[in-house]
Length: 341
Image 1 (cartoon, rainbow, N blue to C red):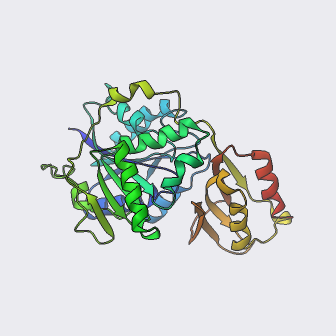
Image 2: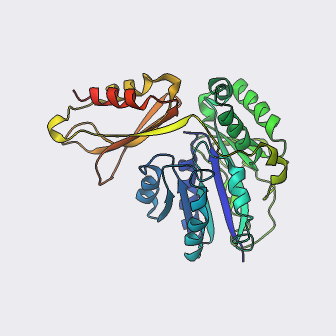
Image 3: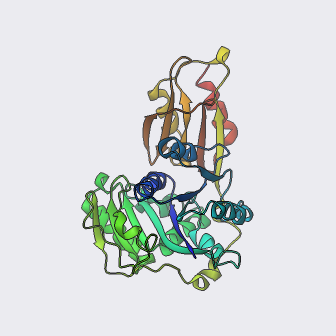
């Protein structure tokens, strides 16, 4: 029996964790046991804690590197651990700079080809920023190539945050996506909402799988749904573009908070200004932060120039993970420490 696998791909801040949480909740409503593998670039876990806090599921985590390159050797053991749990389906959330094609190939290795079945590869696209990525990251050819591969390997492309842009922008994103993938279904989504009945076909119980449609789900709009889902892609056609890693100039920095005797209260405005001050260099920031000594820990997430705040029950010490291109780690830490002086 093959365990179905759903890969979640997409650039930093596109909405992968939000979709994964929805998939977990829907699995639980259907009485399914999900196996979760989450890969994060930073050395501290943020998204895994969010999932465990909101859903109660145990998450298998690969931290401080990308599962398609620096953490690739750890992928087989992680998948074997998940299979021991006898899940009904496995959901893998990749980092924002991962090449899904590398993971698809891993599922065809002898150890897994008779045990795992690629069910879907879903790539989320940030509607607010997708059209600017090629020019913004033009200096990093490897990163641009990876972003294109995320589109090429998908059988479903979700253009997320579609409510934040114009219809003309959505049309341009459709053309851009079609340039790299003629067969995938394309959806306009908000808050990563995707029609679940089609996604869960052939998981339990098995039944024929039609094309994905979003017409019945509020908050989603299908651009084109007449393309059949391709569960497994032709990896050979990408062989000439494979390389030793998915990205070159993207790095992470974990920032910790000072001890109590050196702690100066922060405001949301000051922290958001800290994010904005790095321009395009800082692509993503997330963590559990403390604005004052006696106040609660808050979850903060920064992506695409926007900052979101949520309550958090994180029990540990506060921290912040920053992800960016050509980050000056020394300067970043200096300016961070200056916030508390």
